[in-house]
Image 1 (cartoon, rainbow, N blue to C red):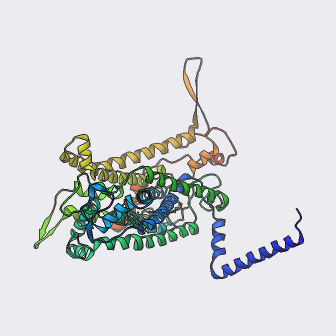
Image 2 (tube, protein in one colour; image 1 turned 180 degrees about the vertical axis):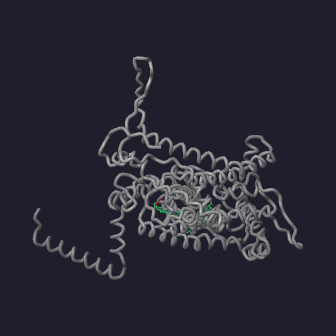
Image 3 (spheres, rainbow, N blue to C red; image 1 turned 90 degrees about the horizontal axis):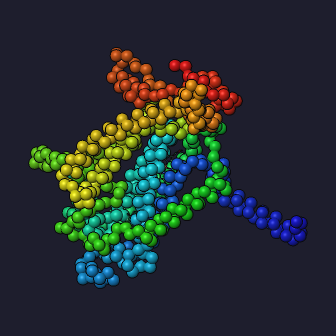
Length: 543
Ligand code: HEM
Ligand code: HEM
């Protein structure tokens, strides 16, 4: 279609203005550079890469709903008589924090929905982070060059737990107050400085009037600020270092293959964000969570039965419940090992191990290469088994945190349950480790069988003598490629008995990690097959 002269002049003027706008913007902000990097980026298609995005979108829901709550929540500890609409609590002396949360729930338009969305989004957020972290661990995406991003991730994980705990403590109800009482005891259990620390944090003796206003600042300002800044750094590193990818034809350690930003990735990711918004809104609308009016306001001399923290703090509660009652008296000071070990030492060691794991594995392997291809968990049996053992440890402590509820529901004695959990917390991870390692090796064996014999066709034939045999066909080329693309390091050679102990220990650990393996057949014919040039059945491997 031909444009009239006037229209053509207008279009060219608009283009000129847009161009000038871009130039002006680009002189002031690195907008073009950032857009270029994003537009050029290849985004992976596999579902496991969506977990980080679920965490990201639930954080957006948290910030939006949390901002709405700040308009009405009052973190003050001043007390007054409750005259609100919830009749059973009328006439009771409650703090402003508690009564404003009741008002949000019963009086403010949309308040209960937003409050429940906020709480559900918090649960989804921490769950998404946890599963995202497991994906990174199982596939070895923390290896060089992504170690720093892993460490930023561990910090994000810690901040998310802290943020959740602070938020949960704000409404000053009986449940959150019980949680704060536990936190007070945990801090107090730290030898020498514990008592001073609790006085500093609580601004005096427990429960005091200072903590909730302080937690409020931490919850709405300090932690979200650091969290958002670190998430930005985390994502910038993902763009800069590029995503890892699953080994497949055309995907190697040297390239990055995936969907372009526009339109595929944008469409997919927008869909996912709407789903996260939809699910948290639906949960907030129909699934009751944290009904603080049922618990009542916090009173230091009361405690609710079946008091449970949010799921992500449950493991600490469980560890506390199953710890034997050990304490010592050292020069007139009581050291509460029963609190210090499970609630201070254990989490500190756990997070230290998480921070340092990438460096530890690099040291054990002696591997300084960059890794951009995801490991299949079965190809790293020891690493996978360690993660499964950790998951079982976590699950047992989480269950132990609900020992009273389990005992009541199944009519078993709490003492018997405590012993069952004490034994399971030690035996469970060991059994899980051994079983997972065996399962991984069996899966490797199965892969090898697939390469050697092909897959079963399901056709069984009988020969003239009555013998029955089944037939196989070679597996597709892409599948064969996937099975053969793996780089499992060989264990380091033993440095000899005279070598320093550090070197001997490193070799022993390396053997523990990489000794058990099933090697895949690597004949020339195999290599030909993965290039797709022949469809002949796979030759038997040379032993
Ligand atoms: C607020 C929490 C977090 C958010 C919003 C977040 C978001 C993301 C996103 C969107 C990606 C790219 C897509 C993907 O690989 O899933 C990613 C990648 C990554 N994340 Fe996270 N993450 C968070 C926490 C963590 C944690 C707790 C860890 C580990 C301890 C971690 C480690 C990593 C690593 C190493 C990558 C690069 C993975 C690769 O290239 O394959 N992140 N993160
Ligand atoms: C990573 C992010 C966050 C997590 C995990 C989180 C978690 C929570 C939780 C579990 C509660 C208790 C809700 C309840 O009473 O049932 C809460 C309350 C609250 N949060 Fe957050 N939150 C986050 C971010 C934010 C942000 C960014 C803001 C504000 C800008 C905010 C403002 C509030 C307020 C005002 C309350 C008290 C009101 C109430 O309990 O109803 N939160 N938060």
